[in-house]
Amino acid sequence: MSTVQNPFKRANDSFRKADYAHWHRQQSKQHILRSQLGFRDVGSSRPKACEGCAHYHGIAYGYSRSTRSLLICGFHPYGWQQDDHCPDWNDHE
Image (cartoon, rainbow, N blue to C red; front, top):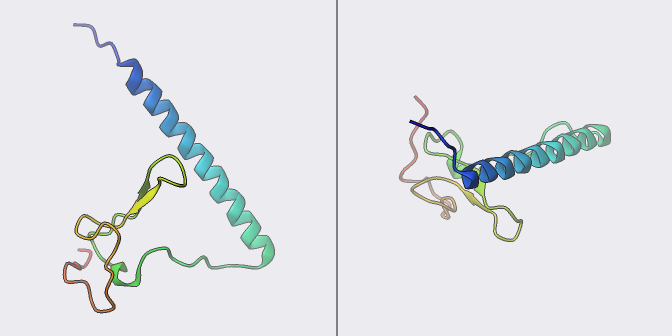
């Protein structure tokens, strides 16, 4: 049986790898610039209500800045929007 790979899957994988490489270069440049300017600590992008939660996902999806969105977790895709404690918070075990 032949295992021919779908050309669209190969193309998507190539774009995904290139996008990640570009993102990684940008992060490295920003890290170097912050260290040169004297900034040592980078603030967390994780919402306060999500700190330490086992359900936190925190990966951005999309290819352009205008359509890219951060998926916080499966329960609250945009993060817990209230000031009180998230009812779905679960400690890492």
